[in-house]
Length: 74
Image (cartoon, rainbow, N blue to C red; front, side, top):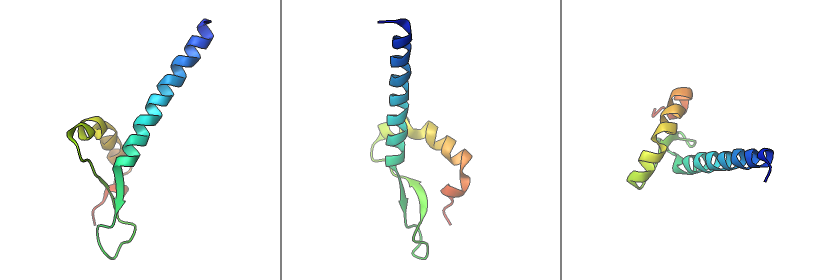
């Protein structure tokens, strides 16, 4: 295997892992109807298991920092 091909495979593997991580996070954050007058609701994190909280807490904090309006509970 050539070094260029090996490097490409590593990059694709890292992108796949990052995509799976982000997809798992997005699947675990659900849009719910917090108040009956607001059908879109706010984003809330819905984690059933402790490992999900540990795994997704770093990206959730980044999401809350970058997009605070999405996380309002009013």
